[in-house]
Image 1 (tube, rainbow, N blue to C red):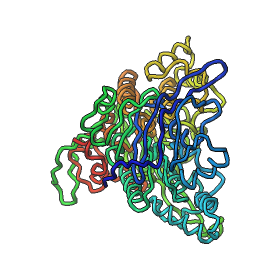
Image 2 (image 1 turned 45 degrees about the vertical axis):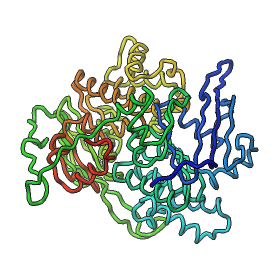
Image 3 (image 1 turned 60 degrees about the horizontal axis):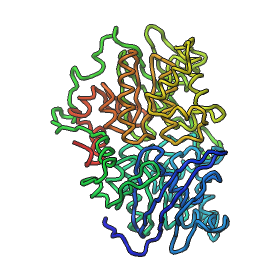
Image 4 (image 1 turned 90 degrees about the horizontal axis):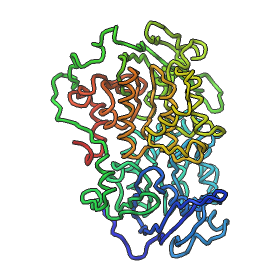
Length: 559
């Protein structure tokens, strides 16, 4: 798809400047940001966490809090200045002509409403001519278009009954409800696995071709940029350091910062595979994790199952039907190693991790840590598992206490973790935030004052400061830009080696899994579909599902 830059843009941002005012302190946020967006164009904005990418989108939408003051420049939509519109005029513009897909899908959805009702409500709010029946039919169609399975049934489900990737797809459906002219998509695929990400990107491209909608794509994922965008803005510290067509940025970057970002993108190394068995799956031999000696094992999970029930009819009427979130999952984790879990959204990865951490119960199976066996059919507080395993959650905004400062949160982790009794908690916290690339000035702030990437690094710091034997990391790098990802991956590897810790690393980013993990388990529909050493999975396994995940990776960053 090729869309030429037009002379009459749909959106024009010229010399935009913003500052943040808090008491007597004034902080510049954006400086002289200028760009244009043509009709039917996909514009990418990329840069480090805190570079001002999301702030640009919020300024266009008129969603900045009063503490942000515009110091210069103009924003024009369809030839009319929108930064001078009244609140009612901007409200009319939002949703109908400019809509948004936000990074934090959990905060975008009402936990007390079914997802179908939320999509339907949006359709009715944006088109009063629709009947309730028509709005419902459109909502189901939108859920189907963004890849929600069984949309007629899932229409009645609530946000907590969906995986992180599925919730993000629901948010995308809501953004499409009003058939807008512009969609501002802030990290729309950060929670999606490779296959679903590819489907969503294809969907966005189809929408551009069919409807002429324009998209501003805010992301830290260079793979997404390479797959879908026509032009790219590279931002750093509130300024545009480089802007050009995507191919030029990727192949001939002119700014040193852009070159640094591209160099930091993890490459998936996939040598040619050789079929050597009738069923298409190479015999793992000594590459299988099962060959690890029992004396070297720290955690063993055997036949772990999780059964959910759902009513046969709406509103809980009728008999309940059983469905399995996990079915007979077994895993062996050696001391001082990282084991990866990969699979599509909804495959059971997070459910299994929560059971290991004592945060969810299982309907069957056994978990043993060292010489101690735990009854996983009971809650972690009752069976003694809670606290033995620390978890880094996929949604940092949900897992941080909004009433506590970042410093208080990290000190609490030391106080109640395995390192309780530290003589100088503040020094430990300061050293950890320094290692994670966080400014010490953030320790006095609360979670809502941090970017998504900063909050994720706080969650990583909290888990490491507790000094557990085992960490379950659920998408710990999904909210981090590529330059920070490489540093965090190395920090985690070094910490695991220093402390002889064991980590379960749940991710949809195969390149990071390859860099981090000594062994990998592939999940699908609640079962272990394939497993083996990292070298086996990426080089010698010819399981069709494993290969489909690998082939979904953007080819530009596969070698």
